[in-house]
Image 1 (cartoon, rainbow, N blue to C red):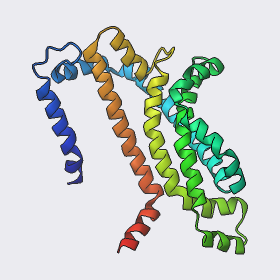
Image 2: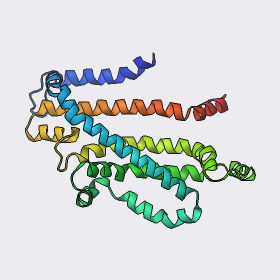
Image 3: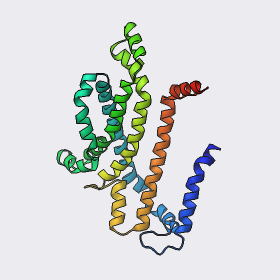
Image 4: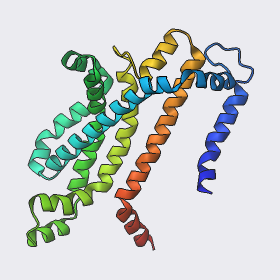
Amino acid sequence: MRIVYWLTLPLVLIAAWWVATADSAEFYVPPLRTVVEAAPGVWTPARLRQDVLPSLLRLLAGFALALLIGVALGVLIGGRPRVRATVEPVLEFLRAVPPPVLVPVIMLFAGIGDGMKILVIVSGCVWPILLNTVEGVRAVDGVLTETARAYGLTGPARLWRLTLPAASPQIVAGARQALSLAIILMVISEMFAASSGLGYTIVEFQRSFAIPEMWTGIILLGLLGVALSGLFRLAETAILGWHHGLRRARKG
């Protein structure tokens, strides 16, 4: 039943799109039927290997690097009030800078290869993870902290057994926000000086006025986002199973 519930709205929207554009003579809004017919000829296995796979690898590399940096810095800053008070204005300033603005700057330092594209993704994804980790570490129960100290739980043991588990709901919330940003920044990074990738391909279709092909790329990008979101939800369920169980128990 849950699958039917999840599929109902998308199917309704697709049907509405199909009907609304069935007789469309608008060049930039072709009938959905035309878009669907164009898709198999565009997204061949060779193009998937050439454009979609590199995009996915860059996205995953950037997201993983942002997760590592965000959690490490978040634990460091969140666990030390003086450090947090010192760096908080700087963090707020850097977070307010839109990542696309940094693309030309990153290109100057990192060139136009995969490194630049991964750094663009990291520059945007690290902030929700970092700030949520800081808040998660700050919110660790004081009684548990004192109990851990009384039992001599310090250093890495305290980090793995108390701090990270207690902050994990906030960390996962930040990672979920970062995943959406990663998809957006992946496309943006591939619009600058790229020779492959999903963003590059969509722009090339737009520049050559291959409008149905361009729409197939946009739809593929949406499906990619849905698939990544589903995988993230599975990972979240595995990581936070104890947290969801505790919430259900408290609700009775």
